[in-house]
Image (cartoon, rainbow, N blue to C red; front, side):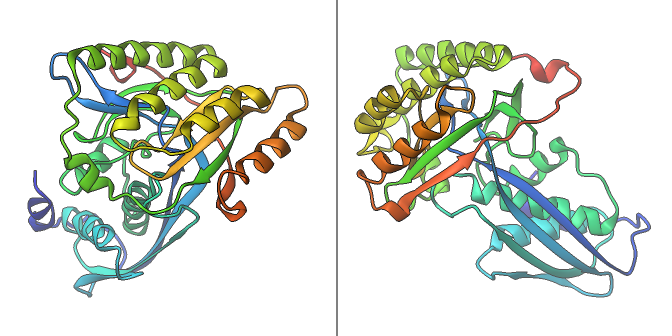
Length: 318
């Protein structure tokens, strides 16, 4: 289904009020624990690492109004999502306002979070449900998307915009992240042929099995090894000039590895909260990272945990 088809479908009367305000939010993700492609021309995929930074959308609905006005006005894709939700249900229009703490173009899933938050805000104003698969259907015609509509760490086919598996959670981590500068257009990046070799695809499949087992066991060291390996494999696609230095620094301070935005400008040290002398290690990491880039480009991020219930076909990687 195309974006135009979504918008042009006839609206149905679901009993939503003439005026209402809804609020929605979505978390970001610090790059990806793993990103690659599977064997035998299998799909591109990524594994998320949710962080405690959010995009927030507020939607003021008016049934007698046509069209959606969005602030800031550059958020065109969020407007498309809002219009699609309205067209699928009651119609009408309104005003959409977006805010949040996720920088754009850095690989922290800011665009995906904007769109998910928008869908939730409009649905809240209309009094309807937005299960994750409904949001997938909305976003699929628009752009490759991170799996931030699902709680916890997930394996997600970002180009197909479909869940591959829910993996679970890791114990708390602080990510000491640095921004190497500039921005990356994720949509343009995903259009670039990756030309993974068969050997690379089998390696990514092996790493996916490893990170699945690591998350299930709550093994942050094993997850860190996968993330570090994936960061190095990604160098030919989106190079990080500080990767070698950050990898060495992680070992020196007792971190579990580095995690990178595979289509962004950020890279971070993974420091578990239960390591001895956590605060002193964190302070050293911040100081040492500040020697690699300007101090203002060093930021700390906390990972998110979720209470996950239920299982089923979505938990199967195959």
